[in-house]
Image (cartoon, rainbow, N blue to C red; front, top):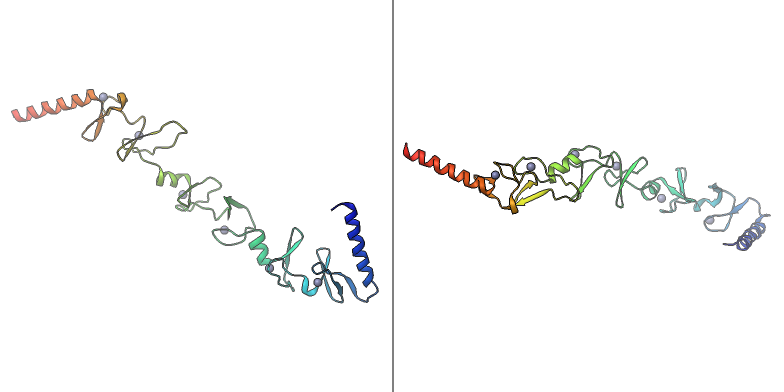
Amino acid sequence: MDQLDELDELEATLTKDLQYVNIPNFKGLCATCGEPVIGDGIYAMDKTFHQDHFVCFICKEKFGTNPYYVKDGKPYCQKDYENEVIGICEICGKPLLNELAVVGNKKYHLDCFKCSVCGKVLNGRYYNKDGLFLCQEDYENKYLPVCNRCHDKIRPTGDVKEAICVGDKKYHVKCFCCYDCQKPFDDMKAYMYNNDYVCEEHYKKRKEEERKKQEQQSQE
Ligand SMILES: [Zn+2]
Ligand SMILES: [Zn+2]
Ligand SMILES: [Zn+2]
Ligand SMILES: [Zn+2]
Ligand SMILES: [Zn+2]
Ligand SMILES: [Zn+2]
């Protein structure tokens, strides 16, 4: 709106006001319907309203003696202010009057935003998996693979390949080596002996030892 438009509008309002200025009890024009308020009106938010026209912006209910809340120049009843203007917590359903956590388009009280396993308040550090929010510890316990050799968790370490999968078993890269000499396998050539992975050399050694043992046993 440029200045001239504003002036025009002001003039129009003044003219309208002047029309009624001689009417007793004229209180001004209603901010909702634009008609003159005569007699008992409501004066709120620097504006005049008919008694029936000072209503919640959302539910259109009269405020009566209830408190009202103002946001961007619009009045709201308490319920709509809490639910629609400031929003409600996705977990407890109560208004987000205090500090909140925002995840995507959902909002939560900080105190409500907890690990779904241990109940610890997540404080902004969380893992989101299968729609659940988890603390680091529970996320790791639940989702990180366990090394079949050292039984420690296999943690992601950036873009370095951290796990080797053999069938449905997983190993740290460093753990997938010969059980006897601890050397990594050449070309991933590993031999299975009694559930241990060994290199070719130690596979032969173990076989040989086994054979000797059996010989001894059969000689006894
Ligand atoms: Zn009105
Ligand atoms: Zn309302
Ligand atoms: Zn909550
Ligand atoms: Zn937890
Ligand atoms: Zn390991
Ligand atoms: Zn070896």
